[in-house]
Length: 106
Length: 123
Image (cartoon, rainbow over all chains, first blue to last red; front, side, top):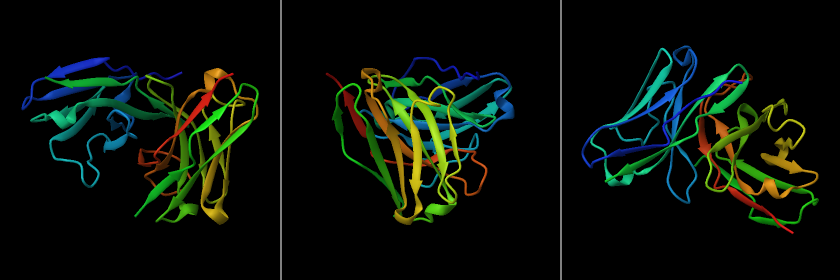
């Protein structure tokens, strides 16, 4: 079965750029999206179709996808961005989630 | 406002059956796919399956095929997730989710998430 691999944790200082990767075989051939989940809340879509932001998502969130790796980038990271982040793609008719990355802003 | 409203938390015993619900509003129910996502305590997201509101075409994750049943009643814009015999390992938060893209072929991202239904299975 298809797998998406994320680092368990990423740390960033406030105001700096955070990068969270998601790796999978030929992932660049698929569309990737990203979700943010804060403690006790439902996940929220922050990036779809590799690099598109839904309405209401700040411009500091961006995405890219090429080769075997997709990346979620948060520029000028704020304390409110501390959360778990999950990548997601389709493998044929199956939805696949990455294992999630805990972003710590310190 | 587009939203998915799920039924409340459940506490069940092993071997019992359960059906939880997810009601969509603010959009055309028959045009979208609605799915279910499991999140076990302290763990990540797992896709369970998806159903099309228009004709109840249903697709399951191989991991959940035969373990749960997904159904829909378009007359009341509601999707269900059902277990016939719960196990302690079914304890989790369950989210219903809407696929962003309209159409008969499921693809893309989940743009609307329900508030979650916590299911606790314990003797």
